[in-house]
Length: 342
Image: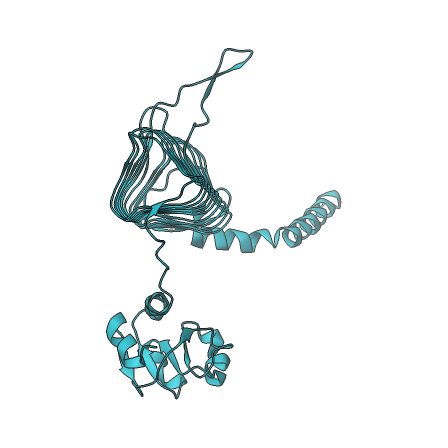
């Protein structure tokens, strides 16, 4: 078990208290045991902080007075907690090798220390970089390129013309490179439009379980470096998602929409197609984006507006019945005045 002083050094936090305390695990303030470490970022949990049995707590310097025990002081306590948790819970590296039940075409290329699990299919000409893990039942189609250090989850599917940078993580059941939803009408029937592009992921991109990313119609669908996608997201053909943008579950992004860098998209948001979203845009949950957003900021609602306007209009909406009744009273009074000749 590492000591508190060792953890402070490894995550770049400031130690305040007994650095010799050994830490076995991370835990919540409420459940932490005397050899575990927790974190504090929200002052609504001050009572739990005061009552915690944790050996130490990670918190911001202005909150130091709220806890009497040993602390790791950090300008970003949650980030420091994530790093401490990673140190205490290292991922088990699968043993490199090819499971006997895996099907690998002779022309596929596998780098050093690649682990290929049971019932994996790897197509002709596929290239898999060093230190990758391809989990059970995954399908890697012909010609797919996977950079070094990637992890492909159980039953994930990477179709033709899919390329991954280094250290990407593809969740269980995700599908990359599926045919985009493109049809032309002849007046009576829908005629499929060939989807000729691919899917390209930059380095350090995460794609959640059961998320689907369609290949582009003519140009690639692109997730730039560091983009993070949650579970059950639909990314349509030709979408571009910028660097370090994070998207929560159940978001639907229609074709050819471009989302900028360092955006955050909360759960259940919908985008119509062919929009441009600026860098640094933050969209709150269940919003519907129907037009391009040109400036950074927080946006909410249906249709999406600036968060300030949406909050004001929502407050007024709840008063509509009262206002309608008040107007009806005023109208009757006005009518009575007119009829009485006043």
